[in-house]
Image (cartoon, rainbow, N blue to C red; front, side, top):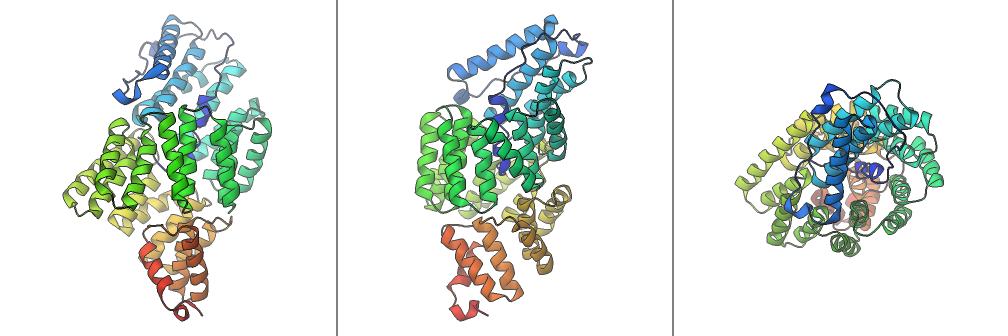
Amino acid sequence: MKSKFTLLIFSFLFTLFSCSPESENTAAKTADDADVPELLQRGENLNKGKEWDGVQNQYANAVNDLRAGKNVNNARIKLAEVYMTEARITGEHGHYYPAALEVLQKVKATEPEPTDIRFQALMHLASVQLSQHDFRSALETAKEGMAISPYNAQIVGALVDAYVELGEYDKAVAAADKMIQIRPDLRSYSRVSYLREIHGDIQGSLEAMSMAADAGYPGHEQTAWTRLTLGEMLARYGRTAEAKSQWELALAQREDYSFAMAALADLEIQEGNYEKAEEMLQRAAAIIPEFGYYVQLAHLYKDTDRPEKAQEMYDEILVMLEDDVNSGHNMNLEYADLYLNFDEDFDKAFTYANQEFAKRPKNIDVNRMMALIHLKKGNIEKARIHIDEASRTGAKYPDLLTTRGMIALAEGNKKAAKEDLEMSFKINPTQSGLLAADAKAAIGKPLGMLQK
């Protein structure tokens, strides 16, 4: 089940543009190859058109080659591509990512192994590790792949993603510069966009993501995802009408694209159209078992005073999280976000966020969450340490500015609080996070109360 946390929206782009190795591989078939991880039947809304036919044909051809002992490692890589594609499109992460890891590890274990085969395996392995939030392993795998093919855009993209998630932003920028020189396309533009946003260049970030969306083929999953991301960025900076247009376009180009449905449902919630939003979210969840849709529904039920429905959805979310963890997916931030924003159980939120901080102490998203949790727990000095780390790249995320402003207010620095809070709500007047109500109230007080 998919997570909505930010950068991993880009790791899906590797395999859709990959080319399977063409050289002959005569590796001996193992007994394990008789038991190939299955291809799950897609839901009714996902099995339309030539895309699903192509996936089934690729799977069947790879299985036949594997069981016949023909081009065995080539067949394993083709299977991994199928599994990774299906994980993204269907949301069945618990089945498909372990399946992809299984076949890719068999390729790596083959000795001697042709260089091109090994490179393909490493490239796909890095993508799976990124998707499962195993960022340190992904970095090492990407470096190993770079040693074989240093000018392959896909493996450089894996390096960019790993560096970003680990908070090594200067290295990420250098790798992204190299990537766009190698191949200026949807994948490289999207990474440039993300890095520009991290460094506070909002307009430049939106321009790069627009270029990424325009570079994609209409109707393809990666193009729809890029339009979804562009819409999310526009919404984050208060440009909701433009965001809505992007999500509607994604739906027009890719029928039943559930992520766009859920994004549009958020707009309906903002406008108080709860019944329509609930219908849209339920439809989206029926297409893909996306973790984020259930969280949206839980909040909707809570906000519309339906505690039993909210609890029912909350229990389902915990089952989904456990399933993801059992399949090897690191869900620390998802747990922390749930306990922070739904339960407001700050101790549990801290437990999970701190576990992630131990893995990624330089990542600004992790530090932003740690700062918010410490603020809510009343640990203002610790909140200041984390918000300063989260601010080091000059990012202008409205929720970062709001958190920083409320920390300044708690410190008694009313001038700094006023500057950050007013800037935050100027960028996005419609924000509604955990601190939004208190921040709006603080701005609304007489100016003298927010000035030193």
